[in-house]
Length: 165
Image 1: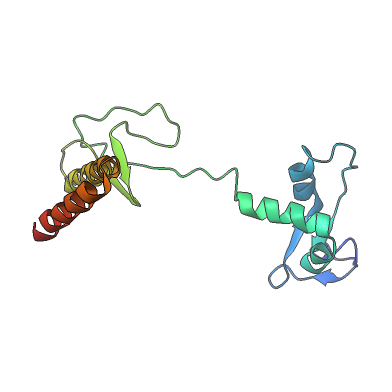
Image 2: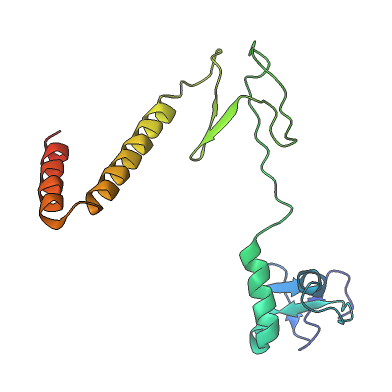
């Protein structure tokens, strides 16, 4: 325990390997516990996953940290064609460089036409699909208010019309 780059668990004194072992810093756990635990001295050191698994309260805290993800991660979305785009306008968001960027699914599109931009045919098709789904929901909701024999007849005619289209 004397080398500069050595790590060990504060509780069980097990030597930890940076590449193989899983461990957390007490400071990270302390920051996550602040709203829950007010009178907790700020500990220093590392804790291995075996020691975390042994303590149910500590395990609950660590699970909440791991479920939250990385709070400091911010995706940087950059339109690479902004230098040739005549319609370029800087965005008010710090992580997006152009006001005309649209994110559909996991793909970044430019909403303006310039050399290298993509047409948003997918966006129109998606909008039409959502409009059809909304219309179908409204029709089915209207069918619920009909008396039983009329509802069955209307649903049958509707199924034939939709299935035949």
